[in-house]
Length: 277
Image (cartoon, rainbow, N blue to C red):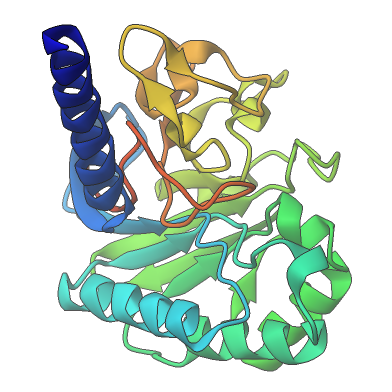
């Protein structure tokens, strides 16, 4: 009898731990990260740091609750006064679960682009590729947003000029490597792309900001994630990775995909404090 009592107690403790952990991981938090970048062509007197907010993988569903959560995250991000907000894709929930996708797409983009206080740049994720990527681009541009698909823009911010390369999603074969033009010399350079695997293609170097992996979304102690959908090296699946050619930051993201649960992978938006050597 005592054996079953102890078994029940252990089971209850385990379930409580899992429930509390899931609740904590699903509550979106700010994650601040210091990044040191070697870029010798930055002129003396130019700004030596940029604060970049990163929002990825919101996976917003067709519900007022999810729309409100997206608005709340954006409000918190704006309150942090970043120099740039980088959006790295997967803004929608599963396209097959959306009743009126045209309305849903417009609703998401209206929320994402409503505030003009801080410069924003967008790239598309695999969920946008699954739901007519050209219409996503058209709708973003109709709202006056900067959305990049294998393109580069030189953007003026309060902290200085940033040359931003936005590359298509490698996971859905929309990635195409493009080189920074001469006009980007002497400016801080970053690359946005959804799947971190793009950062490891031939000729790719510099600072990359990506998402897609959810840091595994469900990750068990001692075992790790059940599945991470990327060809990027394991070391670049989550957080900060650096080698002699590239620095890659992969956000855990805000939302969930497939299963509406996070365990061992915190829901985050990130504030990257980039320091240029």
